[in-house]
Length: 202
Image (tube, rainbow, N blue to C red; front, side):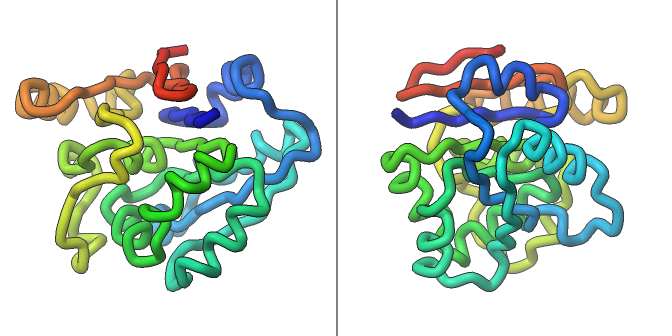
């Protein structure tokens, strides 16, 4: 069963995660922090990692930067959960393409791995990341030549919809993109759960 749990801020929806995803203490997670490389302080990431550990999940950081595809696959195939944390979506996509994550992730999902995205990690798996350039700076990924996402879902997740900080940007994004792609506006206390192609907001 292919399972994806996509959130704006994972640490705020852990109750929804444990209620809807079959996780147990002792499971293992590969925690991918790469998207936040350019930030000195990463409180959202620390909170997400702690939330996993509080569930009894054994967390191992896995920075995909400069990794080879085979090496990355050999690491991820030993874990139960693949957790992709937030940061800059363009930078994240650039390294996801370079290291081969974009190619091996579908295989890992077929093998039963659970994908968890938080913010940028949720945007990454959609058909395109272009709409979030209003929030994230594409210049953080100067080598990225395409904004095509991983395409695991047909919807562009727009996280932090209820944040006053992004209110004006959201209005502009929705006006420009609502008739071009399928958008999912996601509040911080919401998540998208996808099981074998069936999607629901929880």
